[in-house]
Length: 141
Image 1 (cartoon, rainbow, N blue to C red):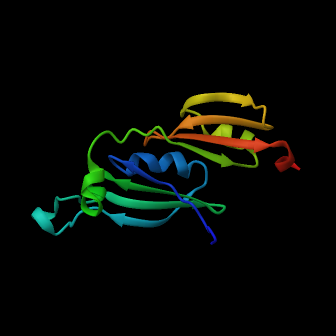
Image 2: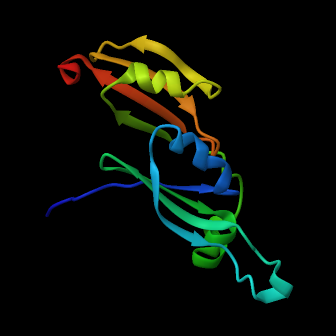
């Protein structure tokens, strides 16, 4: 048995508000799926909205899916509050550059050094998940 990759799919009310958080860190959309059918209901149903997106940088991948899209794929999962208690832990190189790019983001975990050897900071992305960026001393070399 071999595991090849794990990618979080973060459920959100709307995908668009989440994009700038990742774009400021250099992530790029590799896949985007529009939500709704613009030809239905006189062109107003979901026009211009994203139902799903994949963002990638340096082999790190994050996916977002809107409530409307989830309701179509997995109706039972589209109920309730989407504010996440999930924490994404991303090992990085160049933490100082990341900290500079997080200006204006809600910092939940102030910059700190940990007992397990990392320097890290954690911010809340617009979908509600905590994203912790950690740089280990050996990674700086």
